Length: 559
Image (cartoon, rainbow, N blue to C red):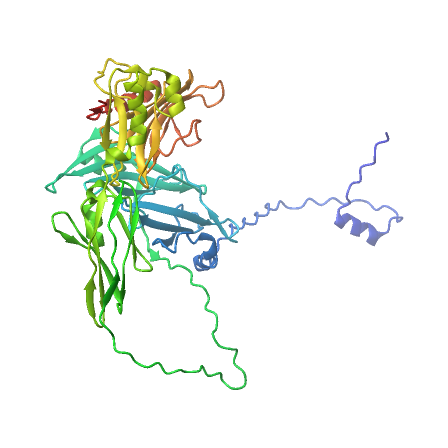
């Protein structure tokens, strides 16, 4: 193959000289001039990246409202604020809502994209079912790590387990490279006794006890040497979008359209008369029901509860006296009652109607809450049948969805404890009479809760996947998937599921990333890029501390 000739570009100045002098003229003697040295030209400054003015970014956020409005805005209260968490010149929109009797905060964060054409939702490492820190505050302290370019905002997350137990998690969160991360710093548990006195217990991020002073300085210790500051926030309540009203009259023509007016005769208001009384209900713990009442000539309805000792309460007072209970007024003179606790047994409900013609009160409707143990009759009967008939076969456990551990002990029992403080007692089944030397000691064979009055299994131990109850009502899960895969997960019961709070695990798969890891948000069987790698000593420290908190509840043995 022939090589192509390389074409060399002729400088424009030489080309012009050739055209002016003529290509065929006689050559002249060449005079060489040495130009004086001139400094190299200064490079033009690089243009700074474009940053949209803040006012225009706020306008962009407002125009994108249909993208970031919460789906449950019609029946939950949401707030929003605009700020710049990572100080990169692109604003973030934060929506947040405090929901439920447990005081859980849910939030979403959106950031203006690099092209300033729309919003990107920021992913986070908060586990499924876990709440956010309590963001809805006027200001948040922060620490700035100049080396990492990261702003860490410190915030508490207060949750309530019933009326007598509060749990406060001290956490920090940061936005970096478009992703949100949350770090546990310390925690506090506050318990109230029957007289209203409280005791407080403090823990570090690993769950070990610390002093109140150490709790107060946990953030400054974690971010020692970093620049401190305060972020001011301005929160605004969101309103549910309203449907555009349709005109009820024809478009205006040459003459303005006049709505026809029909006189309505004024009628004297009659007496308020009850036409339907609410009826008494028998329910199971954790169940729900509805009360309905009607009256003629009434303009206002007020629901009234009366306790077994004669105390008269409004809806808010009734929920406070019965932790976990949820009451909601619906249309059509209906009161929805859900997550019913055992403590509501013996209470009665009445409806008071008021109107121009007076007032009337319905007859009381008695609430009967069945015994919690009877609500768990189905799972209890499976264990009782096996024990009373001498069935010692793991196949029976598998076929009936119960723990195979029952065949390892001579005695078994159960306990009823409200692990998540929602007013419904969970059923715990374990071996009774076994001691610390028994390999099954402390193992929680089975864990159930009630939903709509029916038992729902939360956890079930097997040979390589065991559950333990801790004194703080957390549930420790220890499992193994082989020699290189072991997990230790701290969980909290929330409703009918276990929510992971913190975990350590081993991952040895003959692959990059093999080692021991600590996770503070959610749980993954494989290491994530932001998980903390541990030494053997650190790994053992976590496991030993968590196992030290294992507690065996007082059990009622199967007869």
